[in-house]
Image (cartoon, rainbow, N blue to C red; front, side, top):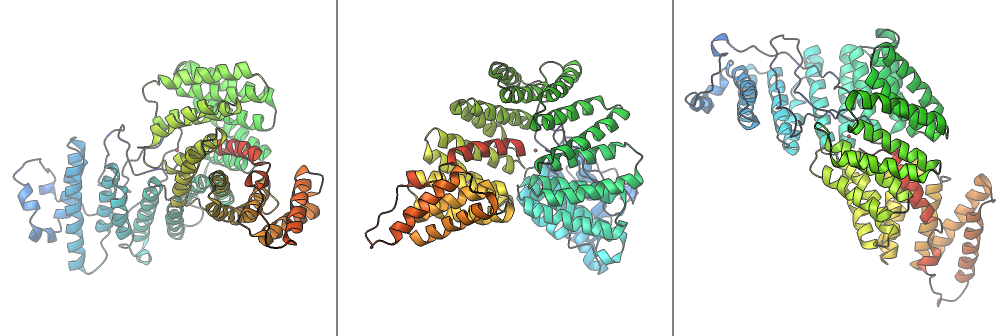
Length: 596
């Protein structure tokens, strides 16, 4: 899925470039890096700054000038801040590393702050220097230290004082959002982007093309947080703006439609997703973007597969495979990604030998990646292959692949949600092979990451809580299981509604747990509610209805007895469809693609 721009430069990328513009209207943009399939960042315009004095612009790297720079009394010199920022830029450009540049940038910020106090007014140069300091912290992987710097930076501009102040505030909020995103704090990230968008729209108007870029950027964040309704509304606005300002079949429109297709697919509206992808493909063909057309063909194949139009899916995948092999070589990860799609499709059509063969071919490519292949690409591919091995009923092999994927991502910033998804999958695998303690541990780690990343209100989070509750039941941690089922019920009722299959499964599990705890009346109340839902809205022609009716009859009979009643065995009372639910859940995780 589309990811977010980060101000962090990965360790294997070129050194961070912090440019100090000579044009007062040029925005400040610390270089950022995205994975290969992601678009460039939305523009983050900032403010103008004073130019360095001509006699100080040389900024030679000598040991002797460093002592005067440490003299606090010199910081109120108005020429010192710009000079120090230039030194920071030259230091990075010379390859000396970001630590020395950070020292210069911090000194520049102090100088601008002193000058701002003397001028008795907000200094946009101070805001700019704090943005640069934060960018260097992020390039060093010190995201926690960048946060207070950026929080301070967004307080410097006064939005009501004009466009320069508004755009400085916008730039600060977007950079702060990026930093929260790299820490996996999606909810805080989204709030920052929303505030930035609000400021930008007030400064530029609702229909400015730059507003469209920010809307798309925010929509991508909502997709990552699985907030698809919000993402869809923003994407529609982006399309409307680009229809006004861009020519028909533009690259901008194609990017918008690809994002809309992703959202529609996640919501189960496959026909609309297919329509957006076809229009995006036509736009890319018109602009001569052959590789992008091949990528869209993969997405079209995915939609055809979801619609069980398997012959058309194979045709789309083979078209993409031909392009990737001819342009990138037989061992490129793009080729492996098509092999994975074909493996999944052939499993669905019952061609298990072909499916396994494509899995093995993809794994051979991932085992010896070509230069330039990212750890994220390999981890994503292994995670998808593990889902197919799970369908082969080979959970041990699936676990090995998930563990390898985890190892590839564990040191990568901004991958908390992806790792949480992998850990949740591992929890299911451990449960299937009877390793309940390991299962609970994996779910617990996933839940902690999802809470921290702001996904604690998503349907996926509710499903993970339910599965963790089942693991706790197997370990006889009944009180903990009840708490997990209760939280899962609250989330799934809100996100999916009471009649959804996942919600009904949680109701059943919670009723069983209450019975095991001796809370017979609570268990009866839940089962009566479930039966009422089935009779009034879902119909009674379902085996679950008969099972729940029998269970309720037993509980009612038991409730009428004296106190020496005994709780039913959890093995008999836990949702009889839990195994089916686990398998459906694992498929759901794969479809939602939790990766950067």
